[in-house]
Length: 483
Image (cartoon, rainbow, N blue to C red; front, side):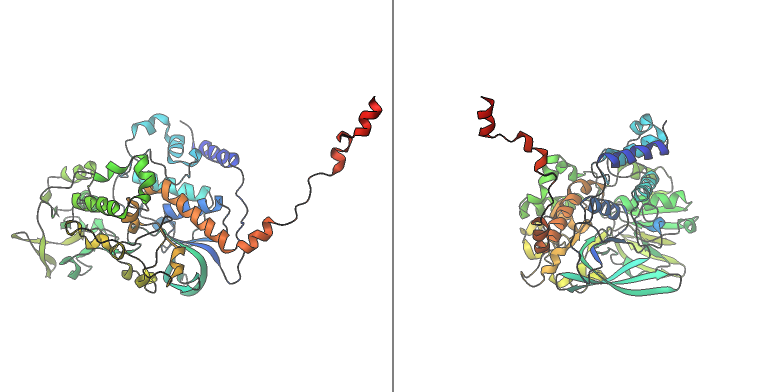
């Protein structure tokens, strides 16, 4: 077995071999605080910060609403799976550099054999790796910082921030030319807290996106509504915490078990998906919705191994009220009583639900504005997704009215219909991070073309003078004298 210090040495050698980071080449603009603001300091935000640095783009700032790095991302907070859902072989934030990969990190600490034996990466191990990645690469994150409002100002933005400190909240306005929304599953919407759960108080109901005190559920009767991965993770966590019983309610007559998204995971489809016609992208997204989001088999067995776990198939909740200390629910044709309810009902894309997007939401082109499906494939939830460009940038609903939208790049699941993947997770990194970086680089360069034209046309000092070759210059008189 090797060691973390050995792996750090390998990572340092990797950075040495690719050469030093380029200097910031972006022309400085008066009144601009940041060339790029990255919203979200989790795995995606860190990966973007490193990629921008390697592209020679400076004045980049990463913000995160979490109080510190322990709360950034989901891996130590809202994620409750034991293992990641994605294959361990997928490229992640290492940007094609093996010395920065999870595999190199893991093998340094546990050995090659141990890595070969794991089927998928453990959640806690992934969290440790990301912390190492962030610290090793020296990626600064401004924690306790919330983006409250994006205010367009010409082609750049005024950013209204709330910064939590020891003395309270400071409201500050900063400016940026580009924004990357690497802000997670609800980054373009909200938790999908459906009726009748939406009327329950927070004392008796929580969405899986929220912090849940599972220890307090020991000895309690718990309901979980929903049957995708996060629902099963929550159910299992409650059971492991000592819940008296857990009832999971699925609206389908059988659990979704066909991961249809795998059919398009080969390189040809993955690499070229953004070039597919709108009709085909819509159909594939609709097919996924119809098949359902599949929980991993190990997430299901993690819950079903408990005798006090009860699965209700084809059962919708019709009513839910608090009576005394318990939730009375009518589901299917039966009535139940629970101490606490967990909504594993996913997320809804809804730009108007995000305060920071309030000023621009009406101007963003949505799929429902761009494409009208045949009646069997109508889906209002898919239609609410933004129709994104090649670099995951917003598009204008009305051409010419909001050109600044092209400077906001969406690296979160709202890109699903446009890109075919739950963007923001590991599977989307290899293709979509470089696409965003290329466009940001191009835009920043072209917008200041006059400055760069002058720089590229500048006089360049000669590397040497005529004395380096004067004695070798051919002259006819020299030939004549030689005869």
